[in-house]
Length: 282
Ligand code: KIV
Image (cartoon, rainbow, N blue to C red):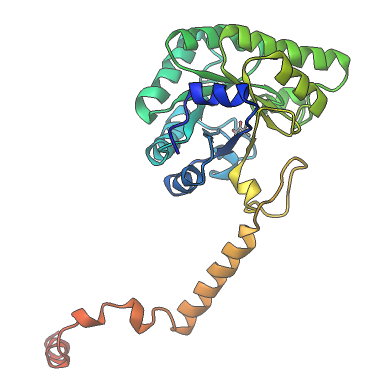
């Protein structure tokens, strides 16, 4: 497969080919995602929850994003890598947004950055894209605004809200975004936005009418325990498989059956005589 770029992704939209995206935060998983042929990888600030155990994404810092982002950047040969700008790394000023987007490109070899918000962040999108950095916008349910929404709730319900979400999409497009994540938006509204814009629309909880889909990889692999959001499909149940394997290891260590002779370096041992001499000397 060849490297996904802003041009190949735009061509996919133009040809009506669907685009796959998964979140990813570490080298090992990113290699597998890349080898599977996933078009775009998002180093999402969801890592605050999935990798760090916070309740929401707000505590995540630029320094943390850079550590995870670098690992993913090193692993992805073909996938297009997007790094998520964390809470308060772009809202304060346009200058702050440009500087931090630039850090992602220089320090992680990202292909694009993502930031949350509609009309209110258009000056930031305009300034970042003017530096030659592709921007993926993110509208609808934007997790960094969880406190304003009063929880992780569907957005764009009702006529006024639907209009607001559509206008946000058109505004971020006019500001220069090449892609937009539509999160927890009703499916017909998401399909309408997809029809009205040249941006690539990536849905999460936004129905099949988007140009592509994204899921958090722990969710789709069934690694997150019992809570499964409505929009998630579990493509595997690795949580149970992991726990079973950890349990089997625990049992073998405690029984003394691991390691077995084939997992040791027995051929490199000294003679029994020499070891007996060492035993006597010390
Ligand atoms: O942070 C993230 O992983 C995201 C996706 C869920 C779209 O923003």
